[in-house]
Image 1 (cartoon, rainbow, N blue to C red):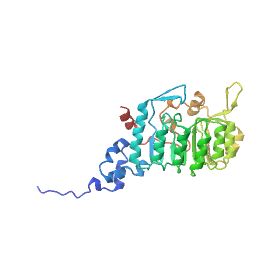
Image 2: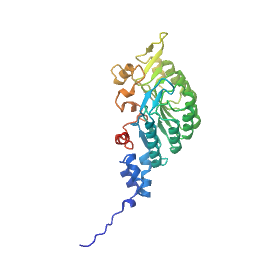
Image 3: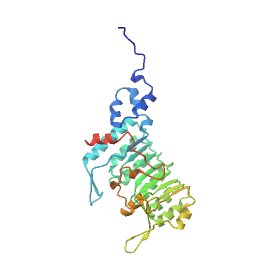
Image 4: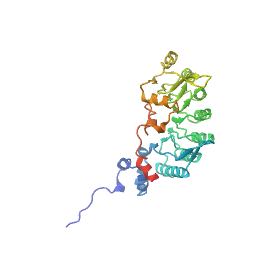
Length: 321
């Protein structure tokens, strides 16, 4: 039998665009050995089309709440696992990550945040993990490196001014902010003072005081989108300490919000999310609900959608097995 010659291309000779489309179907654990095959595969594995968004929303720390600061104890194995994942991701992505998503129950440290900001300096969008073990120095140092940051989703924090000040100094294109937690006058003042160019603000599923909401509506002239859906809107704290909850928006708020291009609000007794807010007394216990629930937002640019393929459930299972 005569020998037949193979006239097709070898794998290593395939066009980069074709390789990228194939490799995009893999998760980051599968990509690691693939990237070591040859130079062309290595370049394809680090393509921005694959690494534009690194969604680690399924990754949580093993922790126990404590009474002493930082009010959390984290299993050392969780820290080592996060470090290992970040090293793989940063090595493969080669600085091409522009969006990073973390779970609210991931308790990273300054070292983790510093490593991320050093190896992903072109970040435009960040969904923050819990604050407990991140210091003022740590977050400010990271923000200074992220000059291109445009969007931040963050848990509420007791002293927000220093973060807003650093964003104002370092991130000239910053335009979108989402706060998950409590939004009072202290927070409203910090935003109005430092982020006058803010265009999108989501306070979805937060506790908001009427005073803070009116302050934002009166001071933020460039605001185009405001989301207060499913919020617990407080008139004020009574002398007894009980929360005076408003069941609907009063005319003064609606009148001032009329100038905003998109104003999302929902305080409906028939809404499942609103019911959950009331049951949880305004501090949403996200862990009690569906694993996608915390990712939703009525503002399309802030909604996180489905979990990405780069770090899906197969990755989590293999790392925790």
